[in-house]
Length: 125
Image (cartoon, rainbow, N blue to C red; front, side, top):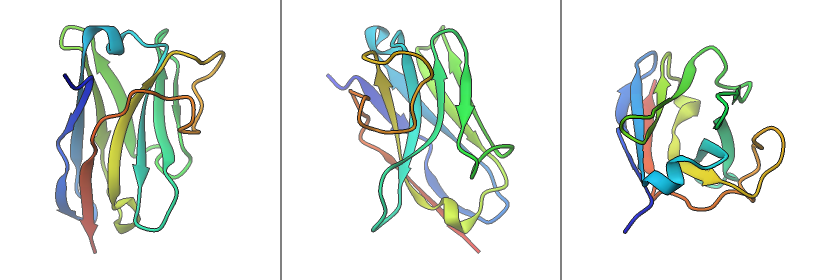
């Protein structure tokens, strides 16, 4: 049974919005860190936003002010609201969870496990 399942990707024009969802198992949802990553073709996977289990949130500079990460505890679901989308936001988006972490949630993908299967976001100009 998949521990993380993303949904909500799609194709939008620049300036549009999308909301990604990541449904988690109860155990995975209680992880120390939950995060959104993205990976464009030919590029490394990069951290977009993360949220610690105490509610501390971090955003990459490239999305700050445009993206919002949130959690719904009743639904064990992680969200990423993406506004003012740009063509450079085009990528496969993944959610991930991590417990073997101390301090702030990192942007590096290395400490995170498990991962979802990804959902594609395409922004046209």
